[in-house]
View 1 (cartoon, one colour):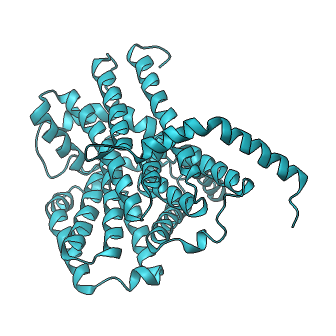
View 2: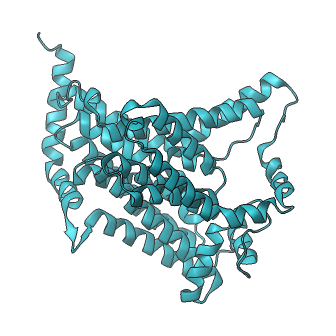
Length: 405
């Protein structure tokens, strides 16, 4: 079948662009494949960016934000919970870091950077668990910088949300590990990660529920589950949650109402207008959260299609792990959207989407590797993410000196 003239011209332009950018593409490929000792070089790059921004945070004279002031108040003592509105895990992590750092505010900043660094490593590991190449796994890790709520905002603020998304990601990795090796240790890790995700942020329940739906809906996942292993996971989860939940139930459940004002229930007074406004807020925050990643992934896929790099039927050959991850993300997303519509909330915060979309970079990298066998699409994501990572250092530099921030 003859190729239309317009498409031929596009292919010619793309070929010229590929020729011009070939040296840069080769360097990106080298970054994705290289290692520094036992560590993948992309993770070293992420760590250096986070360390640079941490240093800028430490030397700046910026007053602590609301979340940081809350942590400064909470970390005075060890406790099974703090006021009840927020779970205790992130405060525990800060207190552990403070034992080493010796400065309360520095401990808050160091914990934030450490959590994000481990998060990138977990996404890289998820990529490898999905049997992606090093380039695909690197795109999964660096994809954090293509989600502004994580790549920028999470370095600047957040507390409990950080631990929530970290351990939700660990939970997803543990489930993927179970698809390949059903050991008691893997089941125990799954249960522990689920409990720690809830102790990080209560809304991690949405991500866990989405994962449960995916496990039930997909036969290849459901048939790999063992009743004995699930009991091990449940027992470990219950053991970790027991004391904090007992603290919460002991007369503190009513404190959860303190956060109800964040949702602006029935803000307009109209049943339909409330739902319409809530749906609009949800859509806007979804775009704000993952928009750059989604748009760039679509652009990469479109270029692959125009240039003839697209692997026909690639999506049909996605592995069981990738299908699970995509189903879990979709189920969590639909559950979160349903809760917004059913509750009538007219206020949606971007960071509420952490347990829903935090593994999106790994899913996007898996899809792009399936449809573009040359690896260019994921190298394109890596390049864009690296640019935004460097841009974050420039932005933190300006912020540290009070310029434009």
